[in-house]
Image: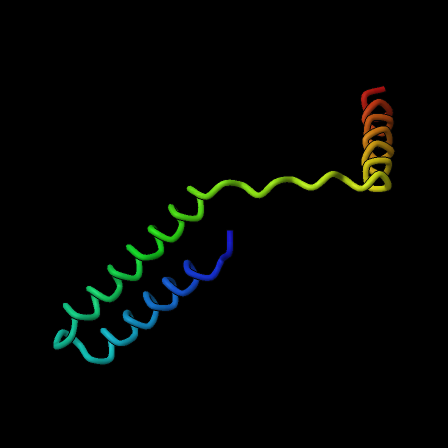
Length: 84
C-alpha cells in the first residue's frame, strides 16, 4: 500500500487547525468540513487499497533461502547455549 494519502490528510488537519487558530471562529465551520472531508477520503483510500488483491509473490532467490536457513540454525544454536 502506498503511503501517500494518509500523510496528506494529516497535513490538511494540521493546516486547518493552524488556519482556525489564525482566523478564529469566522471560518471555523468551513475549515472543519475540509478536515472532515480529508479524513473521509483517507479512510476511503485505505479501504480501497486493502480491498485490492495482494500481488503474486515472487520465488525466493536460492542464495537468500540458504542465508535464511543458516541464520535460523545459528539462532537455534545460540538459544540452546542460553538455555544450558
